[in-house]
Image (cartoon, rainbow, N blue to C red; front, side, top):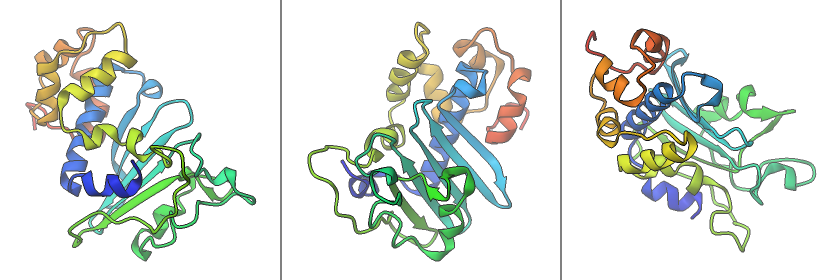
Length: 224
């Protein structure tokens, strides 16, 4: 799978946004320590800008910038044969960023996702608000890898709508914790967060403990 395959499978922007909020809320409940979570969502990244992100602690991550103009997705697989650091001098793989529209260029150069001025990217895709599909660059992919740019496995939970997919990830990462599937389904549906729902997933956590995360994710609660 390449980013071009991902572009054909990735849901529309509102679905990506809502699923990203669900993933972030679930991780916040299961893991109160932010630095150990995979999934995050910041509804106040910038003026009228939101950021959905994932990082696995091993050097791989993605960032999805959302605003009224559309969405831009940046993926970085540090072991990809398309890493900027396989080239000399280091630079993004040809085609990955070449056709990114002007409206997204500020995000391409975002300092939080560059290293010594080099964008940390192995794949990207974008969709302006009026587009009917996701777009990618014209890329000559290296041979011999099923997922050469890392987009398939890093964006896996955005491509798979099944709550079971999140439970499988969470029970593996947060083991030996057992994750209640019905509770995951509730949060995937963005049902209002209650103490009962939180306790089903983490009986050591209260709604008050989650207040900051709820605000950043803009997740609905019984009080909103």
